[in-house]
Length: 485
Ligand SMILES: CC(=O)N[C@H]1[C@@H](OP(=O)(O)OP(=O)(O)OC[C@H]2O[C@@H](n3ccc(=O)[nH]c3=O)[C@H](O)[C@@H]2O)O[C@H](CO)[C@@H](O)[C@@H]1O
Ligand SMILES: C=C(OP(=O)(O)O)C(=O)O
Image 1: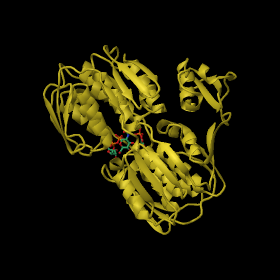
Image 2: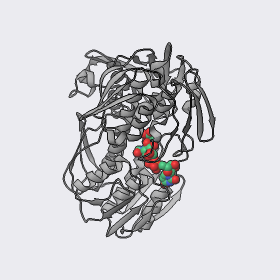
Image 3: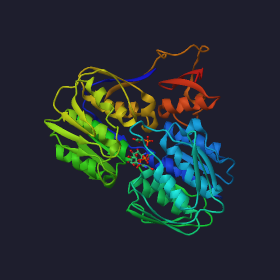
Image 4: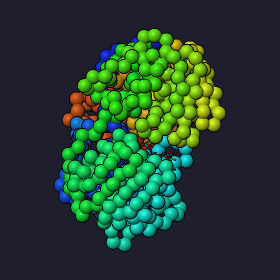
């Protein structure tokens, strides 16, 4: 079992660099399938489990990919399969984003219903409605979707019933190679949509209006590979802003873009956190007692649902009562029960949580119920009295690059520990090896940049083994065992 152990009470100080955005890079990598010629070179690609998963999905469809030093090079001159493997698609929501590019490129796709964080039912009806409007025939059965189009997708006027991020991205990618113009109304406006549109345009596509509620996509006949820098991760940035505020710290969040974080900045300022904007990031300082505020999640430019649990951690230590309303997903309060183990006073009623702030948090054994819940528990642990153990880290590894290392560099007392699984079923003995970091398959990275996720992924790609990893100075200790799933 892997856990993060945090001893609370340290004021965070220093600079933390934000990695490329998970929710931007995943659709961008899927969009690479649209190019029939030339390589795409995508920079600032974060080393995350979700990136490894989409890399495997794309490789299974025939794309060639190499990853080195946060740069992914991709070419897909030939698509050799239209079937996205079930075991990869079920791992995360964003893998469903290959549906649009496959329909546009080869006119056929077979894909399972997607996985992702368990935060609500998460239907895909708006994606399918868009593809049908463009002429795709779709059948559903046994958890799989099959779709095909006779000749080529046709541009259409599509109104989304909900401003879905994923549906906007999937439809935008499909429409990029369609015959004619698509007008997408009630489109999502998130910064990740704009980043995807910029990449599609660099590939020779014609997308206008991304970032507004109406996107116009003129289909083109062919697209080519292109270079692109992924935007910084606004949710990761926001998480470190909360970590700074909750510890009464002084942290420069390098790479954070203020325009992408307006609702988070504004709520933090209302609470009494000082935020100073500069060319390349945001300085976050907090020294006084914070005031409670009410928070309601909404699609962009409203307060992001992906910051709701981290914000709740901060509200726990502020004076007064706050009302948190989750309007985007119907079941995104699973972290409340975990916070309660840390002495938090929260009452949930449907989509509303009443947070009684100001009670001292105490260390406890807690479990990340989803990706952002994991980050929120770590934030709370930074402030709590005593030690907190956070498990369920497979969620956190989907979306945070080396969260332990980044927080430790700011002065947090935090470590990641790999132990034998408490409930591991019988399987052949694990093999353990101690080797120079370079021998783990990450020769191009200095040892300090090798993350557990990277090492595990390297080991896993060698015959689907499960692996755990410990870094000690320039030495990597890698434990590899056959998977039993
Ligand atoms: C990989 C990625 O980018 N994930 C983000 C993306 O998820 P994702 O793209 O899945 O989120 P959506 O914007 O699609 O979902 C928003 C709401 O629309 C509903 N809906 C969605 C699609 C559909 O066909 N029908 C439908 O009813 C969902 O159930 C949800 O209630 O946006 C969410 C909302 O900002 C973020 O929390 C996720 O981190
Ligand atoms: C909900 C999230 O991710 P996903 O949509 O991939 O489950 C998230 O990034 O917080």
